Image (cartoon, rainbow over all chains, first blue to last red; front, side, top):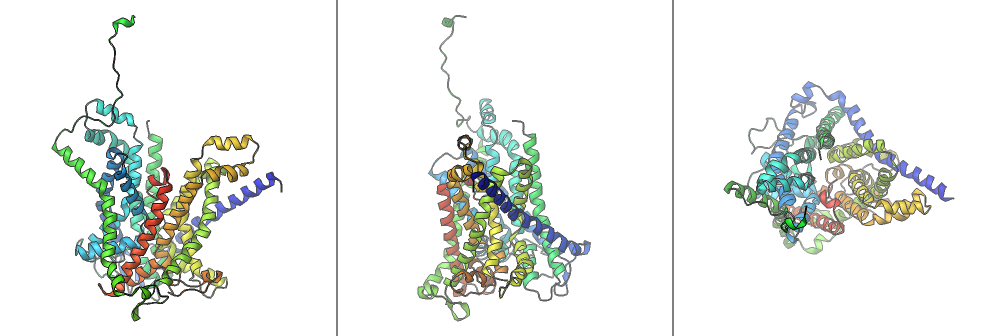
Length: 281
Length: 315
């Protein structure tokens, strides 16, 4: 085989593997949409499950996921943005900073089920929050931290150094500079990171298994100390734990969950693209 | 203009790290809060480990080590052999890596070296979609759609280590692809130009020059992919059959049901009495998982210059 033939063969094989990676992704999304779209109607989205969950809708699970995602935002955003500001604007290049970065990489790598165990041990039992929205949102919030910290830090670092120097030279203090010069320019990037993190939290099952998720609840939660149903766990339950569950409801639930999570990704991508086009420096 | 007229100017570089002093107390409070947030990651990871130890350590005192290292996981009769679970996790992870690494590397090479810009514009968002799909949705599809296919292909059951490996491979692909792509991108243009100028084909350049130069980045990609795969829970729980047996040795092992460490915790924690031996052992499995992923990620970080660190190990 001549080297030109090898080149052609290699290019052909590499293109083929790209297709093997991409095609199933498209298939998965199309398949879920095709199988699930028939189940989606107003009743499905606004009614509770009935008749041992084999009829009716997914409203309590949908609402639970929305509440949990909001709770995650409240728990994660201040801490994550604060940490990102610290790393980008305050931290020196020393051992302590390296320890923080190592901790962030490892937080990102900890399996979600281990976050679930931690949430059970610390929030549910030690702080005695019980199996509750509070415990679940805090657990999801901690799990979301590393993604948001990393993207927010990157956004802050892309703000040109000149902006800071000019601000300092005009007599602004460090915090004034951050507050009025750096953060406004970094905001779209920070928001992108937050949305990506929340999208991930909305779809997670393992961290909420022992901290908040309920198999079935006849009533909606009344406070943050109540349990709630949640879409990802609901999908697990109706797929594996309920005999005689109609497939259409299972696919419908999967579609709603997929739709929610992908909307987060879409919004984040749009913000990022618009931001890149608009950047003035 | 004569130079004698000018006074000697002592020019100083502006010191970017020396802004004017703080304005007032509120700034002091804000800056203190930011510093506290800064160290939160270290505090949280320490807390996670301490709470796992607090709940899991009794397992090591109450269950003899020979029991923990035995080959039988049967908690009802106080048999807590972790070996089948470890083997289950390893089998699924090895399978996933065997599928995902070649696919991920070649896809990254395609995106970085062959694909025209318009294709990249389409393909990269598609891979981001894959990264975003919740594991429970992929697990659900594996359970209702992929498993029957595998059973139809002749396996005694569709719920096997292999089924789990396929799903996990796709879940770790976005990580592997994006970090490998960064690594390829970081290889200086001159390396490629030099090779091409010497008459090498594009493929020879990639195989002999670009890939070796990107070696350390590729190692990181694979390690983080492994870390991702070994910690996955929901998808694996749905599609691997959850049989806590050690499969027979050989390739056939991949086509038998297995049960992973993660799935064991997820499946059994809901049913154990708090504070029981079984409860502690499940936390002890959590400690093992924590240590494995900590080791993998810390090792990967040692290799890292900037790219994957910036991403916090995420894509």
